Length: 103
Image (cartoon, rainbow, N blue to C red; front, top):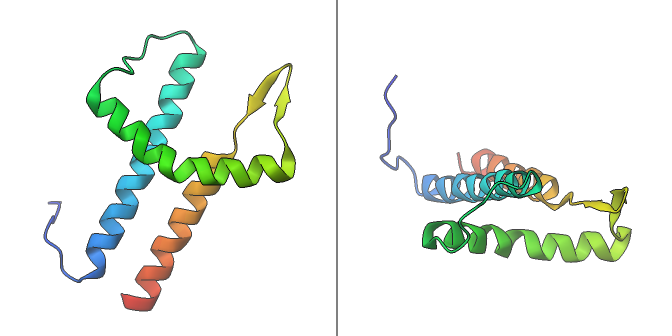
C-alpha cells in the first residue's frame, strides 16, 4: 500500500496539521518518560526544542485549566499530568468533526 501525500481536498491540510500536533504531543510524552528513567535527552537540539515548543503551545492552556480545577494529582509526591490525554482526545474530536462536516 502506497502512501498518498497529495492533498485531495482543502481540509486535508487541516487534518495533516492536526496529525502533526498529535505526533508532537506523543513525542513529548515519550521524552518525559525517558527523563523519568534518567535517560539523557538532548534538550539543546533545535529539532527537539521546536517539537517541545509546538506541543507546549497546545498543552500549556490545557494544563492551566486542568490544574485550576483539580490541583496536582499524584501518588507519593509525583504528580500525574493528564493534559496530553485531554489534548489528544480534543484533537481527535476536532479531526473527526472536520472530516464529518467537510469530508
